[in-house]
Length: 187
Image (cartoon, rainbow, N blue to C red; front, side):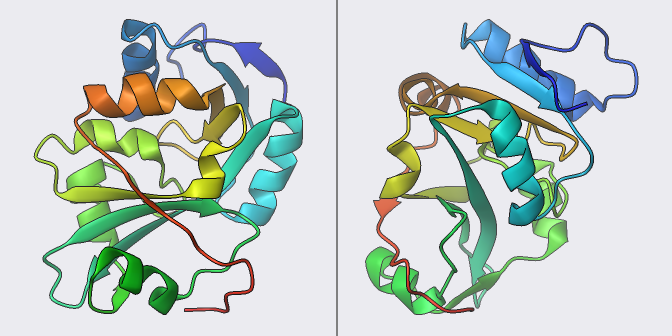
């Protein structure tokens, strides 16, 4: 546990199909990645321990699954872990009414992810583009980005440029970049 290894697990024993599909897609796209297996990490505090194992130059971010009041628009927000989400800081930038956390049913339906495992990798399952990706500009500053492979008992690290230039175009999700202040308070 917490040992950084290159590439996919040697076997799929004890791993869910949705996690293995992430590795299959990254391999297919020829995106190099490193992986660390760990205890369940479903909070940003737990992810900070994982971030140390992944090494310097890596950005682990919060991933929030949001929707509008009518539940007609859904968003995946990637933001730095040290920032606290405040809906008004985001709604102005995307010209939306107040946002709230979307229910786990929509998360499962659109991204095939459960709470605590939310990840940009889930967009590979959103083939009908029901979810708009929002990225705080600071998330893409480090050389590497880290996320869960649709399961919160592993984390992967790969080049940020591979996320932006290879993965997102392949899954047909163009991000909207936003800027969230550091001094925000709770939703």
